[in-house]
Image (cartoon, rainbow, N blue to C red; front, side, top):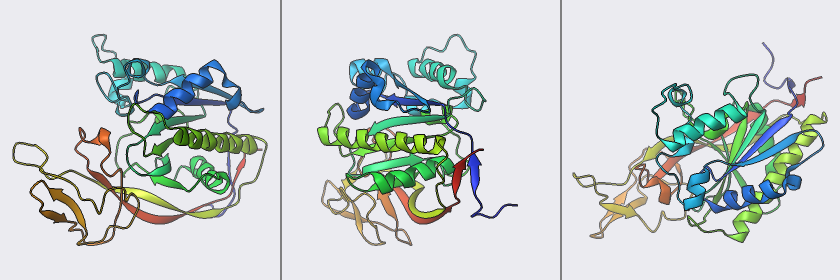
Amino acid sequence: MCSMWELQRLPSLKRVAVSGGTHGNEMSGVYLAKHWLRDPSELQRGTFQATPFLGNPRAVEQCVRYIGRDLNRAFLNEFLTSKDSDIDNYEVQRAQEIDQSFGPRGSSQAYDFMFDLHNTTANMGACLFVATEHCLLPMHMCHYIQKHYSMGPCTIFLYQKPGEETLYLTSVAKAGIALELGPQPQGVARADCLAQMRSIMACALDFIELFNKGTLFPAFETEAYKVVERVDFPRYPDGEISAVIHPNLQDKDFHPLKPGDPIFQTLSGDVILYEGDSITYPAFINEAAYYEKKVAFVKMEKRTFAQPALQKEL
């Protein structure tokens, strides 16, 4: 058994995919993907090929999150492997198309890496989404971005809970990360968010180029936030929301939330306090797209993770 700090080697990356418009009303990725489809030169480096694409073209056309089902929840095995010719859900069909074009997921033919570009209405700044801390190459990429991105902090968000089935677009490739930038309203492009996304992508592609050229990336420790629980709004017995995010919590993504702090406020003015037994770090606070998913915010734990040194295979 190798030591945690022993040098790890992975194959070079030759084929990279970049998705914008996985959600058709998150406009930084939509505009960048459309721009790169016209002129992909900004994405190219010497050692690999980068292919931009629109994740959900019909949703982009209508400037909506999705047509029939959230595409970024449609990469379930039951959907990708279904032979049912009667499937009439556009996003399921699109997930199968993406899996065939850039996968198939889990196969040796799958693309080496995939980026997925998103915006959030929550005050989360620039976030780098990785499945778990065990994703060695994406974690090294995130660490590189954090050191070289000059427009602000980049938070690492570990989204997959133990035992959860993979259902996101980046899972089609052998590895991947999603970029989440906000706050940005749905259907609106903000130049600052777009510039940040562009800069993060440049850092990420530079990392791949350096990795492919044999650069040794040293071992490191980094702070990251890991999903613990998704918290719903308070509701009346008929299912209607009975309270909204408290002003003290609004826009406080990744700030410590302590037991006894206010989290919700009813329309009558009553305050609902956080009853947890320890400090948590909320994210996606009051995310517009999550009302339908019954998520008012996501509870995170802040932890430090160690990663071994990384270099391309000889």
